[in-house]
Image 1 (tube, helix red, strand yellow):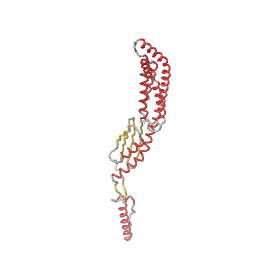
Image 2 (cartoon, one colour):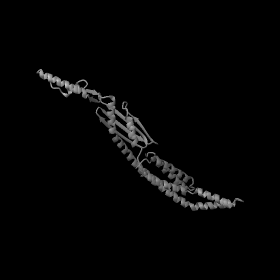
Image 3 (cartoon, helix red, strand yellow):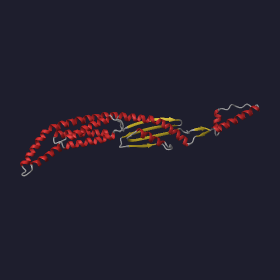
Image 4 (cartoon, one colour):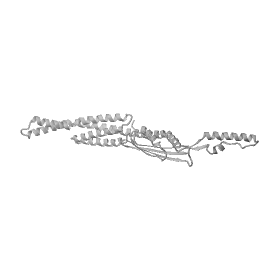
Length: 296
């Protein structure tokens, strides 16, 4: 299945005390180039992003931006179990002493306990980073899936366009073959006339040598091999459009081969109709090359 190198995805997410916005987009490129724009203070996130996107994207210039917003005063906290146990032990001793002294104490709530110094501790910066990276890592696959879906949909549209262009090329190649076969009697007669003219105006020339040179010219003017190779390229292009994985580079190389054969066909055409068909062929090949530039 053909994938496009053009894609876009955006997403929002949140975790306790933090919110974020993703922006992921790509355009065509010769290889895989990833550019990240990340907030400061989240060490280790870049490694995660490069690994995940490197597995998902084979080719293209990819840009990922992340905007992170923390709530005022937000941060991780943890319960100090040791301090809490000591506080509960002391509280029990106080309550027992109050009972012996026949004193009635107000009930102690959980909020009272948490308000005591040392029961709750603020998390470290490393803990905050780890928590945020874990939340972002859980959110990332959905973003990448949306991004890949856009590239796949664009690739499907590209495949339809390219398949139509391959069909147009095949039709022009068939027309070129018809014209090349139709010109053969004319070329043979022309060569015979040229041979007679040369022999009639060249005293002492070796007729066998002259005939050999004219035969070489006839071989050089023959476009059968070019047409055969163009037909083979058409088959290769159709096969690549149904092939899984990265086919953009192969298609790009194939376009160079298409154009090389079309150029040779035009240079050897020796007829206005065949030249015109060759030029039409070059136009369609160039149009197809522009579309192929976007295939992953």
